Image 1 (spheres, rainbow, N blue to C red):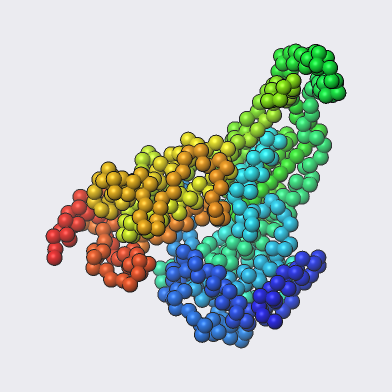
Image 2: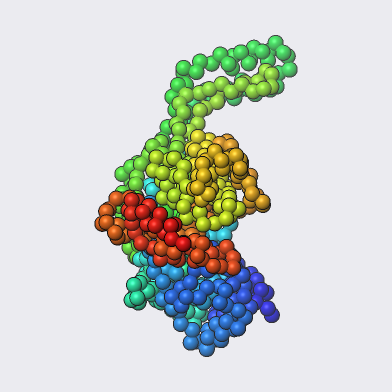
Length: 587
């Protein structure tokens, strides 16, 4: 039986309650499993990024895959430490990333395929959305749109270094609920304890799942199983009674009778009399909230996306603190700690941010007459609270951090892409623009904010082309147009209203994927704190010692890789201009 049929049978078996998985490590003996794994990750933007052994996807073939399968079968396979690097976070802090070798990535992907067959059929909890197939940020936004207005309080939760601190024992414990194969669990332990290398030193890890590994998001989700069970228990214990009561019983009864009579009466004169009586009801008598909180009722809902979570609660404020203490204690058993800076408690009417969206609840008082297009029909209905989903204004800070605009939201040239061809520059900007529009397609009214985002990306593309060719903006617009097109590359045209109900072919992007195109190429060396020639600390820039025209390569990717691996020195603007002129004058 081939590996595809074995995986299908494994998925089918795990839909049965009480099924225990034994001897699944034997699936790792099949070279075909690693071929599937290779095809799954070869298109990733990081597939050419080497680990500590300096190898990437181009260094592997059928012989390499067979050697991996043989090492797994003999039990001699050892994971190598991940290469530690850092990326800048929005708050100015650094996030550590661990880059495994491509060989380890193949094995991790093979393990992930098996684990998905075992656990995904059992994922009944619809409150967890991060890194799960067929679940996205858009689903979270849609659910919060309808759930938020039913509650009074919102808790925005976040953990401190959750991926780096989760206990290995909790991961193995959660996996052991359905996996009874010690050899497979030992392979997971080897991956977790492989450690990382930094500045030539190797560090062993006794906790955490390194961000950057293919298996890490899945293992983190399994480790959070205890946290999810606690919130499910809080949800069951705090859902009883009607959280709100109507204040308009008398009017409801009379209005219903009048509408029923108008539906039954056929005489036009009598229908006009009933309609007049219905519409003559004074709205001033109902100028209050149509419902009021019920002190005897409770309602609680929650959603989690990786290490970010939000909890909605209808009830007294005094009951929230015991919940947070309970959550804090349970999180400590898993190894994660609540981030006191980011965990906030507030009213839903004050609005809150989650996953790049801004949720605003508007409470509307009184009653209103709804006049329909059909003649002789009108109704007096309650004004209900409603939650609107919009773009989080902090998106402009992310655009500035990526180099698409300045700090005051003015478009700027993205220098990191200037080494690409004009066609590739247009394709890269098009990918980011489509990702932004796709991500915010669930927003109610993002016209003004999205219009500004689209304007920044559009003119950042034009600025980038102008900077590359050392010409003016007007000449680039004359040559390429406002929406640049060259060969097969075409920049998409969107209006500010396209964010609502936009139907773009393709999958919805997660928040991280929106920036995947922008983050594909990164500067190879971090800037120093002062100019290496005059010692100035202002206006520091990286100067490449080797010119682009001196590089040789067979394809675009090779050229781009060489371009960003050139040796650089840190200079101030004045010294940089001087060095550039000297370098240009040399033959």
